[in-house]
Amino acid sequence: MIWSPERALHYRFPDQQSGSEQSQRYLWQAEYPVFHARDMRFALAEYQPQFGISAPLGYIVEDWLQQQGWLSPYKFTLDDGLKMVADGKLDGYSVERLIGNYHLQQLGLADKVTVSDDNILVKNWYIVFNPDFYAENTQLVEQFWFNLIAAREKLEANYPHMQSR
Image 1 (cartoon, rainbow, N blue to C red):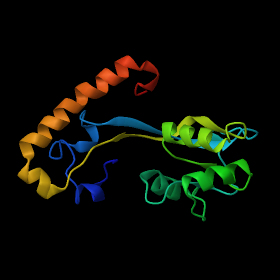
Image 2: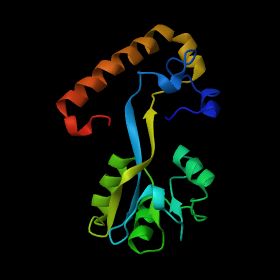
Image 3: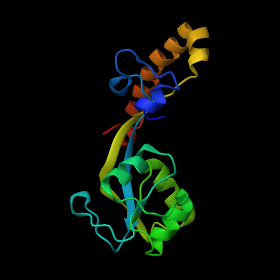
């Protein structure tokens, strides 16, 4: 889960007292590019909405798109959104890069849809806990978060192409 002030009220993030958003005890650094039609060049700095960009309902990237005035007025699931992009009925869809690429391959749309080099957002994903569970299992959760750093770094070392950018 991406940290936000609202989410911090309901969930226990690592390093909540010292600043969760800067915590090194994160699961993964997620990139949110724009999946767009191959025949349409996309540059974040030059984007002018025609149909808008969609994103999964309730995601932080959806809020960001809304603030920019770029959010599509229509809500689409990831698969439906990628199909709409392929059909030229949506300017783009923003979702985490690895997840989006996977769905693109599964849908067989890689010949029609591509991914931008630009990222709308780059945010850390955290594993969070219910505050009551954390209070009852503080030492266990803290050890888990501590071990998470080493596990992520080992994965990144074994798979350099997956390393946080």
